[in-house]
Image (cartoon, rainbow, N blue to C red; front, side):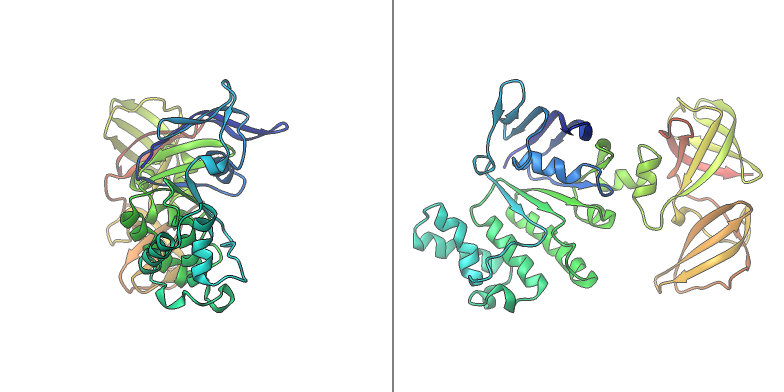
Length: 370
């Protein structure tokens, strides 16, 4: 299985820069998700690696072999890159049965009939679609069509499998089931998966690494829990997590090594970072995940409930604290009446501190509100 390396890859459409100087390494057998809002450059990046789009400049290597090099004039076509591409709309042949759809690519590669039969049988079993081999796509549900499309893509045993928002056409329940199937499939096939989505929950649950992009620029490339717990900047912090992180504006009073004294929500607070704080100006933003902002009887932050959203396992509570609206997640089957006075505390060591001007993270640690 290959490693994929992108070096200074840029793609311009006239004056518009879709991808700007992208450097990243997709490790052998990794499951990398390209994540970001619409128009951020994630699909363009996927298409450039696959050979469906030509970069303006840079270098792409698959398994140590250059497949694109702007300086040397190398640009291998998709069929020479040993990759499989799974499209959003499945692109199944409507006049062919499930078996014929899966076998089609192998027939084009001149495989003999016995080898084709064996390979298709393996994939029918792997994707749990043996009962449907004689059916046509129109006779299948969306999830079954999705499995056939995956089987067809895997048939030639590509080194890399590319997927461009493959679950977006499915309903919520089926999408959740297919996430579990894709994660299992990645483990069973030992392939390298590169996956495009705008759904941060998909990225969090599926990936070994998340490549988060915005306006063509790489914002953070890290394992999903690192992206969640230690966001590199305010964009990452806001994009990843549902409900989103609380952002509390603060004035910086003193900085002494790992300790920063702040003024926020009309109170004094002490932020203790895990490492010495550098790059912090006079104004800061404190980032607190909703689960680190519990409602408790003796909390130092006072407010009133603005809205509550009980979901059984947990309740999301919006709390008005003067001019600032905060979100708390309370675990368990609890509910609060609107306009109820409540108190919040800040817990845990995963509180983030950002410089307001640069929007970059300057550290994480714990916050004590006095």
